[in-house]
Amino acid sequence: MVTVSVKAGFFQFHLNSAARFAFACAEIESEEKHLEWPQPRWDEARSNALAAVLLAATSLESSVNELYQQTVDRDKKALKSLSETQINLLAELWPEIEKLSPLRKYQVALVAMGHEPMSKGQEPHIGVRMD
Image (cartoon, rainbow, N blue to C red):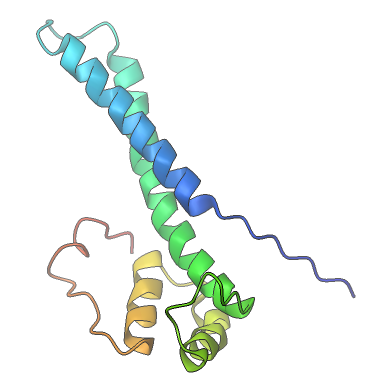
């Protein structure tokens, strides 16, 4: 049997794209906010806003998935701040948590690394809730 793995590195691309769409949306708003409703580029602004939100959410999930995948791949260059024990722990946990929500994956990683989990009643947890 042959196993193939792909190292995507999409999290930064998704985040940069989200920023571009958000900037385009803000630019349209700035140019047309003085105009009466509906503004000429309303559909374009709405599409840019939707793309920004979706890509930001995708970036969050890509980021945490890539972290775990780097532990599975033992990518010590990318994980230089983690100990061998921490890398092994996250790699071992990955099959069990792969299907969890992105925020839950972050929570597990924080606790596994000896940190407090994010408070579910405070930012940033509230602003990015995707459960």
